[in-house]
Length: 326
Ligand SMILES: [Ca+2]
Image (cartoon, rainbow, N blue to C red):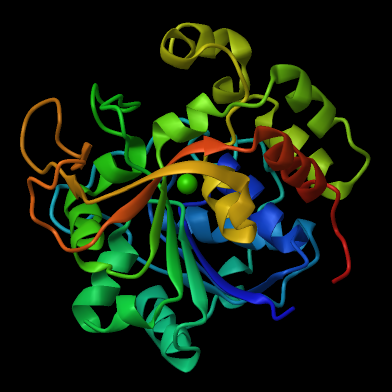
């Protein structure tokens, strides 16, 4: 079977690391590039985090590109402390002083456009952070979306439940204008793993313990970077996520990645037009689903609703048994 060509666009926090490892472990995925964007941390930290994840998995040959350092329009907000100041739990002490030399010189957005043009209709783009690089790509090359095979997004919401604000999910809230542009102008098949989709298909905390206790470099790395991170504590979630969704371990970005790796992972989805709200004091950045065609849009997205959690759990478990030779 031909391999799926994949570009991951990431703001590499801990869950992005998990998603990248999942793609590295998937036998049917061929990585073209990892492109970096601000989000969970400053873009410089994001680049270093991606290089570190590739190094842990012994896959340093995959090119890494630096992209946008801030949103298109809104003032650059401070970064989330969700996964610590550096995005990977603030526990890595031996940072690589030569990291800049290991990055590609080309900007992430031009690399994305070039690679997708070289492999027209063959590339799956998986967007795991704010959508700034994607919005810039369609501005530079209006044909960029139609050259993609498909697009997978972790972001937005389908029930109006937010995590950084009352109604907005982090990736969309960090750059609502870019999210708006992408959902209006990317007319390729688009699959959206929203905040509620991931939370409603959670794994158990017992699964999380088992995941980290595996005897492999990737599992040990994940254990280290989650060790002091409040977002991986079930106690912290009792007062936040659990109120809406009940308890569980939620590796957010991995849900979008899993849908790309294996389409049968998604058991149900809603096919409908979507739009991002740009105004308002509590709904800016919220994704609205238009199930009655009020917006008169010609393009629909697949908003994922139900995941094969058992199958997903197997992919997550396997992803931390690395390095593995492909
Ligand atoms: Ca992310």
